[in-house]
Amino acid sequence: MNKLNKILVLAMFSMASLVSNVSADSSIFAGPYVAIQASVVGVEVDGSHTDSTLDTKKTTNATPGMVGNMGSAQVGFNQALSEMAFITAGLTYTPTGDAKFAAKSLGGTVASFDLTLSDIKEVFIEPSFMVTSNAAVFFHLGMSEADISVKGSDVTNKTTTLDGQTIALGLKLVTDTNVFIKAEGGMTTFDNLKVTGILDGDGGSTATAKGDPTVAFGTVSVGYKF
Image (cartoon, rainbow, N blue to C red; front, side):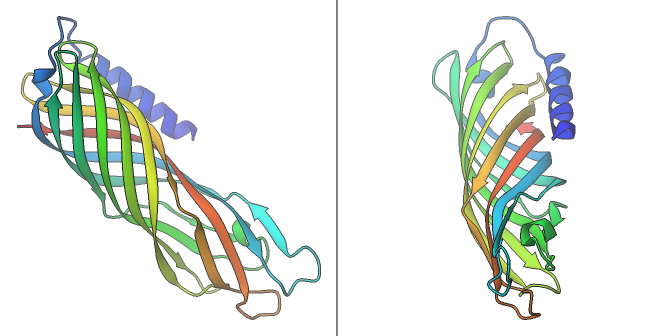
């Protein structure tokens, strides 16, 4: 996660150089916007593997993880509530990325397979509070739906749709030319993932695995406010 933290901190410092220090007015953010996003994500699955064919311990626990990159598109609308506060509502879509890892440690025995996170759709709100004339801090609350595919020669290939909850903190600003920029860091927790048809100790496919996927992310967004 160190790479993720360094990128987010650098983005925050870069944005700070664009912040103006005169009196605040949230109306500068009011209206719709579109943005593209680049994210560094860290994904882990806190889970267990069960193989009833083993003579020894049948269940093993593990937390395999990965770090990857993703690109997203976002649309939103900012509504002023007062001079110092406004709220954002929006939608984010992430088609795919390289957030994929081999889950052999989740299997714990002879089995290995790839888990890939993709097709992420999120609806969110962001209560936001002005800190300067063109910048605000915000708290992000979102509900997500994502596809997690399981592929490999040691498992029955399948794709599962999971629901998740997202929380994040960040800084957003808008320039005199209506360029919209924000940086944030947070995490998404997804429903329990269950994988069946995994290679077992006897060469069959009776082993199973389950786990709770968690995604930590650092995101930089650049767009235009209309």
